[in-house]
Image 1 (cartoon, rainbow, N blue to C red):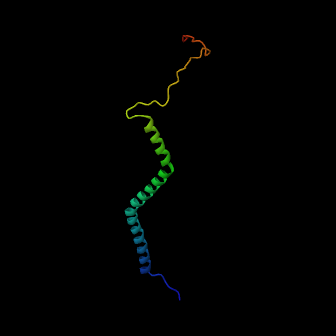
Image 2: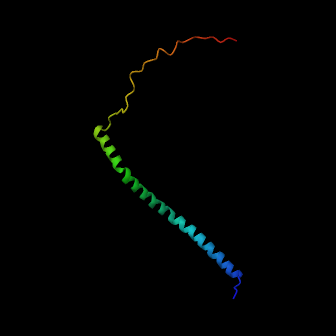
Image 3: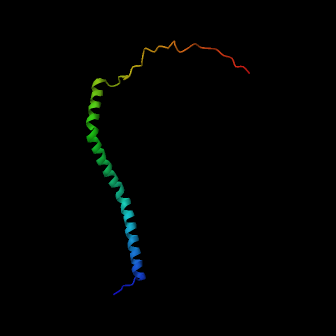
Length: 97
């Protein structure tokens, strides 16, 4: 027995595909921000576990060393800057036309 495709069957199929597509778009707009927020929160927790111990130790050390309002210079400038006398001598010149 051979079945033939009818116009109504084709229209029903196209209508079902369009309803599923647009339904998915609407649901994605509703739930995408919630899903992204959940994923970002999980990633933040994961990074916090990996790097949290290091950050907490560093912050505690800095707070213990320095008082509030105190100015701290981490790197002192190099004091022994000497000019090299072997570079050459300065020669004054004139432009010739």
